[in-house]
Image 1: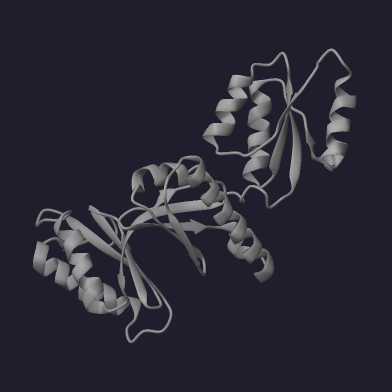
Image 2: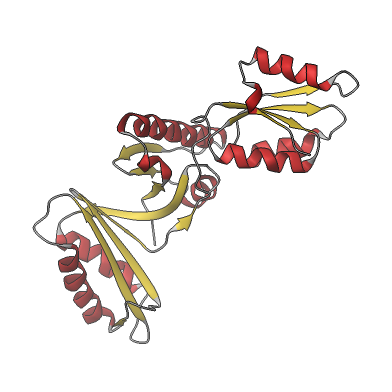
Length: 258
C-alpha cells in the first residue's frame, strides 16, 4: 500500500486553553520540523484542529523519527481523498482487496468532523456492504482480522489501518529550562522523565563521566541542548549555581539523581 502522508495526533495539548494550545502546537510543529532537518528528511507540514499532517516520500523513516518526539500520542500513515462517498468507497475497496478474502473478517471504524449529508454510521454501512460484495469477507466488529479506519474531516477523508503509539508527554520547550547534572547513566534517565514533560535541558557533565553515553541519548531522542562540562575536583554546588544563574534557571529546576 502506497501511503501519501502521515497523520500525527497529540493528547494533553488539546486540554489547554485556546492561546496555550496554539503555542504548544506551534512548538510541537517546530520540534518535528527540526527533527526532520536534523535527519535530512524532506517534508511539508500543515496543521488542522487536533491534527498535524506531514507529507514526505520517506514514510518509514519519518514514522521512526516521529515516535521519539515528545507530545505525539500516535501516528498513522494515511491515504487521503475527498469527503465524497464515492471517493472514500473507491479507496476503501482498493485497500480491502489487498488485505481481505472470504476467510477473513473486518471492521470499519468511521469518525467524522464537519457538516456532511451523511452520518458516520451511513458511511460504515454503505462501504461495509461494498467491501463484503467485493471481497466476500465477513463483518466482525469485536475481533476482526483487519481494521480499516476512515476519518472524515470537513472536505477531506483519511484512510489508515494502524495507529502507532508515540511516547506522549509534552513538546520539549513548553515547560521552561532545567539544569540536569549528569554523573551516572541513572541521572540521564531521571532527566528523561522531565524532558518528556516538556522541559528543555541544559546538561552539566562531570568530566570524569563518559560523554558518549549522553551523546547517544541526545542523538536518539533528538534533543537540542547545551552540554557543559564541570570539574568534580572544584566545589560542584558552586559551579552548578553559577551555571544556573548564568542561564536564568531557578534553583528549583536543578536536577540531581542520587
